[in-house]
Length: 471
Image (cartoon, rainbow, N blue to C red):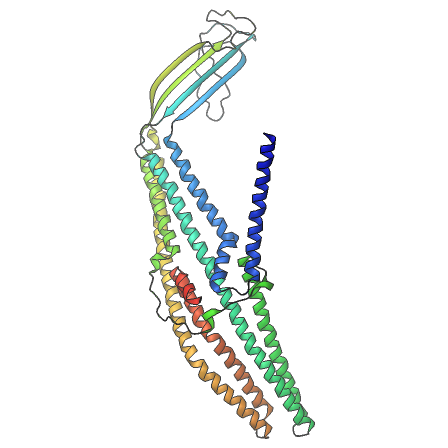
C-alpha cells in the first residue's frame, strides 16, 4: 500500500515537472524562435496577461454560483444530537422571543414546584427533512439571476480580451513606428556626417568660413539626438510589449509582414455599435436588473415547506419529580415522529418589497441610459476612426511626392553649396525637410494600419484586422 502511494506521489511530481518543462520550453521557443507577428503578439498577451486570467476566473466563479443556486431545489436534511447536564426547575409564565441572542433556554415538561440546584442528564437525537414543493417561481428566478451574473462576467471577459488585444496591437504598431523613425533618423545622421566632411574640406581649403563647420556639426548633433530619441521609443515600446506578452524585451523581434505596405483589402465591414462587447455587457446588465425585479415579484408569496421529523429524547427526571441514577437521561429513550406542512407569509413585507422594486426600476433606467451612452460613444469612436483612416489614406498618397521633392531639394542645395551659390543654412534646411519626409513616408502606411486597428477596436472585433495584418 505504501509503495503504491509513493509511486503515485512520484508520478504526480513527474507530471508536474513535465508540465513546467513544457511551459518553459514553449516560452523559450517563442522568444528565441525569431520574430513575432502582430497576431502572435496578441495571442501571447491573451494567454499570459494576468488581467485576462482574472476575468476568466470570475466567469468560473459565476458558473459555480449557478450550481449553488440550483441546490435550493434539494430538500434540507438536518441531524441533531445533544447531551446536557442541567437543573430541572420549571415555572409557568411567558417569555417574549429573544430577538438578537437566545439567552434563556426553554425547559419542557410540567411545573414541579422545585427550586433547587440539583441537576440531571438530558439527551436528544433527531432528524428533520424540509422541502419546498413549490415556490411560485422564486427559485427559478434566483437561478436565472445567477445565470445573468455569469453572462455579465462573460461579456466583461470579452471586453477585457478586446482591450488587451487592442493595447498589444497598438504597442506593436508603436514599436514599428519607432523603428521607421529610427531608420529615417539614421539616414539623417549619415547625411549630416557626409555634410560635415564636405564642409570641413571646404573650410580647410579656405573656400568657406569656419562658421559653416560649426553649423554642420550642430546639424549632425541634432540628427544624433533625434536618432537616440527614436531608439528610446523603440526600447520603451518593447518593454511594454514584454509586459503584455511575458517575453523578455531583449528577445523581442518583430515580423511586420504587410504592416509596412499599403493594405491590400480596402473594404471594411460595417458592424453596428450595439454588437460591441461593451454594449452587449450593458444588455446583460439590463437583463440582470429585470431578473432582480422578477425575484421581488415572487418574494411576496406564501412559503410552503413540507416537513418530516423523527427524534428521541431522554431525561433523568420523571413527571413526579423523581430522579434516576447517575447515568439516567443519557440514553434518548422516548421517541416521536411527525409529518406536516408549514406555511409562512410575511404580510408586512409588502411595503419593503414595493420600495425595493422601485429601487430596481430606477436601476433599470440607469442601465438603459448607460447602454445608450455606450452605443453613442462607440458610434462616435467608429466615425472618428473612419475619419482618421480617410486622412491617413490621403497622407499615404501624398508622402511619396513629398519625399521625391525633398530628395531633389537636398541634391540641388548641396550642388549649389559646393558651387558657392548657396549657404550652409539652405543645405541644412533641405536635409531637415528630407529627414521629415522620410519619417512621414515611413509612418504613412503605419498610420493607415493604426486607423484600421482603431476602427476594429471600436467595432469590437480585431479578428478581421489581424487576419489582414498577418501573412
